[in-house]
Image (tube, rainbow, N blue to C red):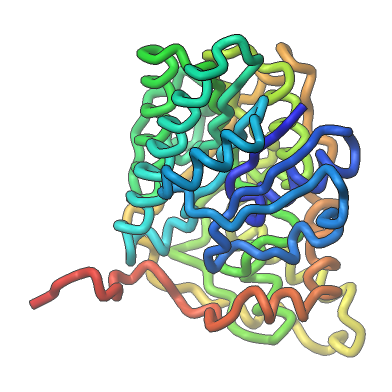
Length: 354
């Protein structure tokens, strides 16, 4: 089977590609623009495989997409290419509209054109989305596939928009599709701007560990390799037209997560026995519109496809910390000019404050 994976040089996409190349005989075409969060090094260990190829392509470029899809003739398009950091969406919402909405539209149109040409093909468009489209939970309850959409940030709104586009193309144009909505991912190869990789890399360098508000915001944490297995399973066996929520059943508040990272580093870092990493924790003004709690009900995926997360938060977090300790050069190279500064303060030049 042929998989075309958009955003395959990103965090989740590269994990999916590594899984497919290492454990199956499927062919993979990685389509990625290589923005700041994409790294060719994330797929380096499988790049020599005869089943892997790469195309540096912007998903908004319909003409190039048409040529790529026509040449590769995919059986599955797994769409992961997206701007994904909420803080950046507060500074530069236009980038999120362009990539997440316009880019998804372009990809859907080219997939529709392709399928119209080959209507007999066993084809599926797999759209990978987020639990943030559902909004915020209070202390109780979980998001299910039937939860109403209530996006609270430009990022969440752009992903909600793309979800609706995919479903509309399925209903109107009969494009076979599935949508998966996942909880917060963590693991190796994640650009060091989100909570876990930012905390790890800052702590390693003994820089402040920023926590928004009171640190009590809750997220459902999912190890990225468990997510990759769920994505592959859904792409191969999911029922067209269905939505599947993917979650780790692992709710932790942000302060708890940061303290766990500090404890792991305390145990791992030789020469730091007399240094208390928790002293680096600094509370900062909360993010505008910060959702209080996310939690995923993944029972549909478990029951229908037999998936369950295999990695405990404790073991996954420890292996993630170890990976960042052992891959400081990757972090330095990937981070580029980003110095772990606070984002999401509306300082983007797109805003005319005159």
